[in-house]
Image (cartoon, rainbow, N blue to C red; front, side):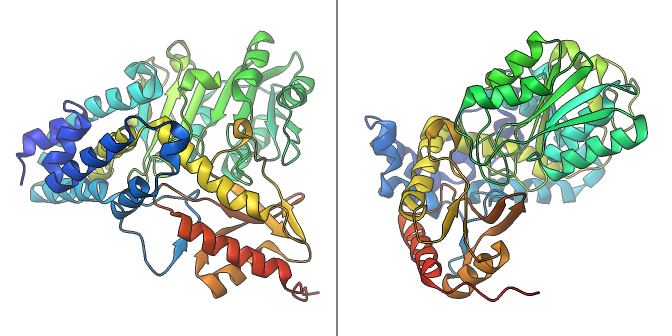
Length: 436
């Protein structure tokens, strides 16, 4: 077992990813190095199709052999090396909880903050570590100084928790919510920007953008919308719960003043981990959601007063970042898009199929939603699990009535072939009798 101090330093970011993995699991690190060397001279497209490498990545996870999980959008499993880090921090904490948690592990947050800031391309003074995107975005939504009559522009395809948070502020503070509707899919960036622009008035204070729509996986041109909104004097909140860790970008590429994501989705960090970004000159404008000595101060740490939390899961985030970085963000995005395209190109024109996601690379990545005429989404979901043991999730909103399919880096082509067979079989079936 590695030296505790070195383990804490490694996870906090003092060592390279290879050094870190060698310390946790030497055979794993050696195999990783061997497989990565094989990709050095390959293009992104060629690497995305290298089943030998991705088959080894699959072996780095502990996913069930009996269920094909195509619902990685809700929450993703962690690679074994992240699980091992989490478990060892948990065991460490339990030796003397108040000492090791508060006096040792708590100090590791600064190294982790720096590591996350580097991943995001921002200052570590602009990052707070929390439990999920909902917590981060609610911190901003409820912390901003807004008054009666102030207007917020948002979309009917934003995430429900965010819509409900804004509705609560509307009910409590008499602000005005201005809703836009983005057809699913919509493959005209200028037209999407125009939808937001038409909704902005001199009273608009905030434009709320969901970078990747959770219902369908469609990507919104966040930076173009933000640039337009800033030119009109508005501030911009970006919900990046699904795009962060799935697509290769930095926070500045979204145009966000305020930004949050869940790290237990596409970064594959421990469950219940997230981050919040606020542009440095705007931190003081946001009140802390929970108690803080200076709730209106300019220190991002005011947003981390969560009380007792899982220090073990928090510290293991660093290992997840290392795993993500060693695969490579561009390489990972390319693989995820390849998997989506592999099944979607074969299924989006099936008889009775309704496809709600763009296949253009600038408008989607790993996630896509498909339904069938005459079928309720829950019926498609149930039939896939009954016949192929494929786990998906139903998405029903406005005209969207389908299942969301989200592979991850451990998904292989055989899994996608099983999915294609299941969807093809459904397309040939008579639609179920609908309950009255």
